[in-house]
Structures are given as C-alpha cells and as structure tokens.
Length: 213
Image (cartoon, rainbow, N blue to C red; front, side):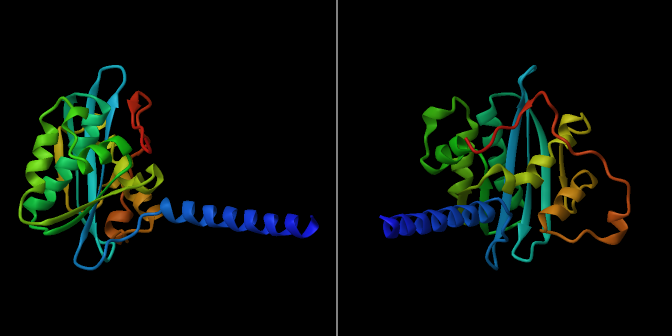
C-alpha cells in the first residue's frame, strides 16, 4: 500500500507539473514560423449601448510589429465584434500583400464558427465576408488562445473606447499599448518612441471583452 501510494503521488506531481508548464506556455505570445505573419485579433461590446469595436495586431517571425488596427463597428453582438476583428485583420494583411497568415483569437465560439464554416451561429453578413477573403490565393491558418496570450490586441481597446477614432491603422506600436508590448516580450520599442508620454490602456468597465469562451 505504501508503494502504491508513492507511485500515485509521483504520478500526481508529474501531472500537476505538466499542467503548470502547459498553462505557462499557453498564455505567452509566440512568434510565427519564418515567412509567416501572426495576427492577434479581438472585439468587444458595450453592455450599456451595444456599441462594439474590434482591433488587432500583426507581427512577424522576428517579433517585429507589422501593423495594427482599431475600428468602431457600431451596434452588434459580442460574437460579431470578435468576427469583425478576424475580418479586419485578414483584410489588412491582404491589403499589405502578406501571403502566409496565422490568426489567433481568444473567443472559442468565433474560432469554431470560422473553422466549421457555421453560418447558423451568426445572423450577419460578416461571416460570409470572412469566408470570401479566405477563398483568395493565400494561406491562412487559425488558432485559439487564452485571453492572456492576446493582451496586446485586448489593450488596444482604449484607442476606440475613449472616442479617439472610428477606424485607424498603425505601422508602429501606438503609445497606448507600448507598456503591454514590452511586457509581452514581442517587440523592442524605439527609444525616441518609448520616451514619449504614454496613454492609459485599461479596458473600459462597460465593455464585454470576454475571451476563452
């Protein structure tokens, strides 16, 4: 009985260690393979007004910032906002002539909807627009991640939520997310930009930014 207990305890510790290692790996941003660009997209909905926004960031295998975007998309559901983030990310990458794209989302329902081409989940034309852009001559892959691994895209919410813009694209990290980018370990901020005063990047409390669902 003592030997059995010892073996069981050893297996339990091993399983717990593997779980910790798995969780540690899952919450960090990982660069894509060489020749690919990775887009992290996100979307959120104001629970009081139903107004929604989307945003995202594209980075390459060297962890270099390729582009980012934020867009006010009006009234829609949280799922539709997540899908808008996916579409805008793909549309931006296509317009910049990228041909190999990995797209990550932290919303399971949005991920399943796109992967399974499930039109029933969304009563909106945005899913059809996603399928159309996927049919073009390029290679696109999707991945589901935990919200912690999507924090740069999540932090960009403030750029729209504070009413600064309707739609915009940045080719360098916006001031509002520089601290998060550095914490993410995915980009080195040029000194002339990093020394500039930063804007706050906390999500607005009225917005539904649910991920991992």
